[in-house]
Amino acid sequence: MTYESAVLAMLVDYCVCESPGTVKNGRCVVHPAKKRPYFTGTPGITYAARVNIILASLSAEDHAADNGSLKSRAAVSAWKSAVRKASGELPELYAYIRDELSALRELEKSGCRDVDDFAAPFGRILGRIFTVDGMISERYSDPMYRLGFSLGQWIILIDALDDRSRDRRKENYNIYNLIHGNAALSETDDTVRLRCMLEAYDCWNEIKRLRNSEDYTEPVTEGFMENLFAEGLPHADRTVSEAAQEAGSENGRKKNGKSAAEKDRVSGEEANGPV
Image (tube, rainbow, N blue to C red):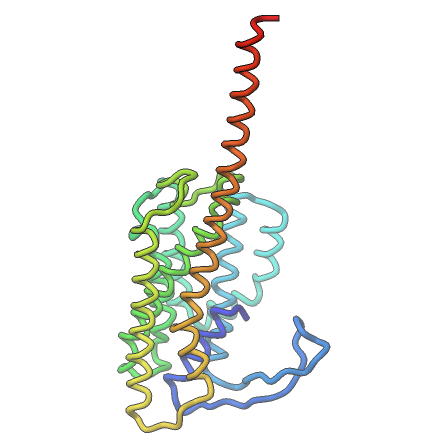
């Protein structure tokens, strides 16, 4: 399960309220040497796992369609059985995600240069996922959708920022490269991501207020999620932004250095005259 799916699972269980789940100690595939505590048997975990399978399989299909690599085709084949089960249990959600990913793909193919238009499909995907039809009280539906929408927009934009150098080398679509070329992002670009983070945090506060008004005991995950929305997202945004700036500065130094060397060579040839 991805980090994003784990957050989704905790949010769903936070809103369900009646399902604290069971904490067990065990070994996982990633860290088999040491037993670690983990939750099991909650609606949120089951739902998030299915969503994770759907997103991973559709992403693999997308990559396979784009580059047709053996790795991508193998990933599609590996997910086939699991996605058949997950999409069978969540058919409307599967169709919705597939259609919105197709819309996002068309925006990329058309060379979309509008940040809001580009970020909207993935925002709608996470908004729809976070709504969790039929699993949580209707009172949570609106703030959960808005939280998912804001978080989805932030995720796709921070990914684009993080991938700028790689996309430039591979000549892949990247909205920031289309808009700015090799130049740094504008203050407006940073403001868009900041707005998404603030909106997500506001939605989390609304969800927390609704949950606590029902007089339930505060779950152990509330502190984690508070830290995630108040500190984690801004920290991740700063880290990626600083890394992108450093990468851009390094590219600029290399480019300027090459230009300077070229100028020196040309100047030397002009001074010496033709050989």
